[in-house]
Image (tube, rainbow, N blue to C red; front, side, top):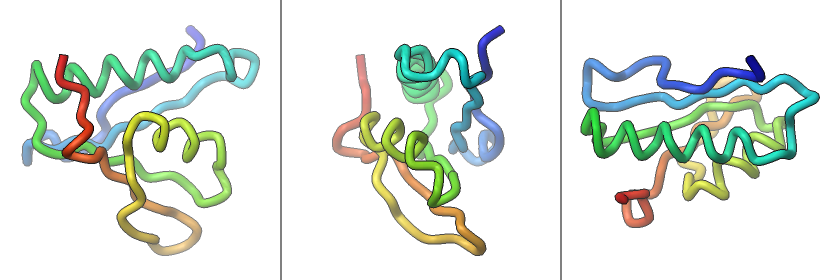
Length: 95
């Protein structure tokens, strides 16, 4: 196993918080981009999520770059150093 990716909460409301963890030695190889893209497609087209979001710390620049590349936009700063991103509705993956 090189990491994890999936929805953590909100599914009972037709939403999903998407999260991931990847072992350091596997970073930068595109694995998580592929995994998150598949999870987004599954969430939208198989389980019918109406909203997908992600939360990370403001210092986690790699995670922010990853989710922004997947068409998430920052929607608010949270307590502490966390920030919330949401999948842009006009750019969702809908294959």
